[in-house]
Image 1 (spheres, helix red, strand yellow):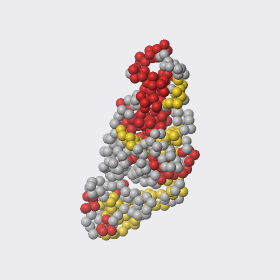
Image 2 (cartoon, one colour):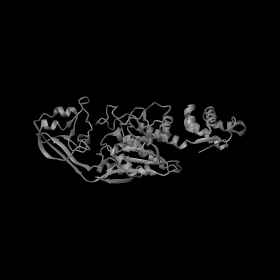
Image 3 (cartoon, one colour):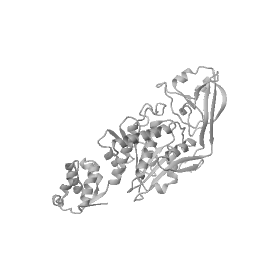
Image 4 (cartoon, one colour):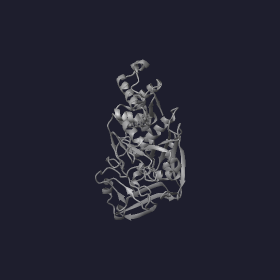
Length: 431
């Protein structure tokens, strides 16, 4: 875990990254995604992949690329009453082009989306795979549109291009991989998912700085759904090496953590998350086939055990997919704490081992080996002593340190310290 000062500095840095990325108009393809990847590469180096439109990826096809130059609605006085340049949520994502033309108010309203329950907020809407156009407005704006006619313009381009995503691979001692994924397809929405992007980048940087990694780590910055499907279609062999992972989403708000389990619910990533998050308010929920890219990785043909770490759950906080998911919703300390939480999960995965006693017949005499003297410098020697007894009790070559932590209720870090001490005195071997 980072110190208080380091955590504060990290939180400020991550919040500034969120602020920097906030104005960019992103979608599942386009210049906004590439600009976002370029800026994230300033935190951790990314390899960018561009997959051409029309490419078959599993049961899907990479769509045409979408880019926006401008979009607006003008009243009869020629004033822009709805303006994409003021807030990029105003335009339905993937709206097809509309040349400037006059339409009746009745026709215009058919293309408008608002939230009567939150009259000051702009909703976020998309139309990725159905050609249409539309604007999102606050309900107050909608009610103020009283002219009989309006002029509309959607200056977009839908044409063959590419789907872009970023990837960072950190090799370890093993070919076995741990995967982290953050979706980069949402426009000006901070919690969902600029927070996940910032946290993923910081975790990747922290792991890149480690001199030793048991596992290899892969970080994906991808458009939601079509991005993970594209990656899986192009990386079947690599996918087979993934032993677990996390999607990182909605990590900047004031709530405690929620961990959504992988499909089977008992994979090493699920157990590591439960141990790492113990001792703080968090909720573990079972897998369900809705949400983010964990559902693609856990699909029947792959069954890669990928869970999801979040704070506010998608669809469960008022600001979800609205303009209220703004810079005011995310908090720097929450972003830093999320990095610590992810690294704690990694530490469990890295530190786990199967243990076998080298003195299995009865309890070995710890006192004559000087182990009790070694406990004197520990902050809680009694807990460490009990942890050693648990490790020795389970050291039959079949159980692991995670087993010991789960059965004992002792923090995993203490169990790992106990195992290290026992190894040093040639009482166990870990593999």
